[in-house]
Image 1 (cartoon, protein in one colour):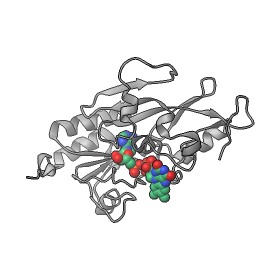
Image 2: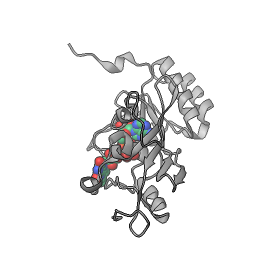
Image 3: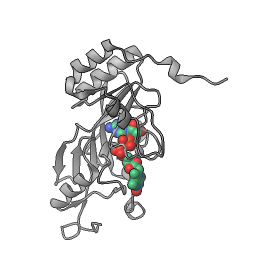
Length: 237
Ligand SMILES: Cc1cc2nc3c(=O)[nH]c(=O)nc-3n(C[C@H](O)[C@H](O)[C@H](O)COP(=O)(O)OP(=O)(O)OC[C@H]3O[C@@H](n4cnc5c(N)ncnc54)[C@H](O)[C@@H]3O)c2cc1C
């Protein structure tokens, strides 16, 4: 006997839409057919699962409010970065809320002394590469979609790329995460620590989890020195 999972969820009502508008503002709640169609697709071939609404929050607090609301009313939520995924992870197969992370797009810190950077998940991967390279650093994970994928999507898919064989993949560079749990709780995991050995490694659990466990709202990554700078052992490109 198969279980129709969609039937356990509730629909997005006009009351829920009003609450979402109250959280993120009218302009960031999209319901037009064109928008629902656009956000119902990623790069997985020929699939379209339109959400009932697209919501574009600006920070972890707003995401927390959205997840609390959806948890209370049993509305499915699908996080989305750049929509370049090839495994269908960003497809809202149960409808509900499509949670776009594109407005969380700040590079918060490039810490030259500790060779670490703190970013939001909506930063385009190529933009981040260019910013760290201007300062003499190198961030290796480089999915071939780097001009349009986002760092949060890279974390959720544990992206690799052409440099993976030599330098490793996203999980080798992520040291800390801030994430919002389905209950709305905001958690801080790991950080700028090389020796972070006790307790469960929840950072690595979230990497590659395709948005099924939590929404990533901040990422701490390790940088390498680029060639031509002291400590260089690496070649950009
Ligand atoms: C032309 C092309 C080339 C590619 N090359 C590569 C490659 O070389 N290597 C490689 O690994 N992949 C590659 N990919 C696949 C894809 O680009 C990567 O998986 C990329 O990391 C997806 O990022 P995105 O921002 O587009 O994520 P999306 O497609 O938007 O989402 C992917 C998954 O991440 C989840 N997610 C997104 N943001 C968050 C967040 N903040 N918190 C929690 N979950 C989140 C979504 O729910 C979904 O499950 C390629 C794709 C294309 C189209």
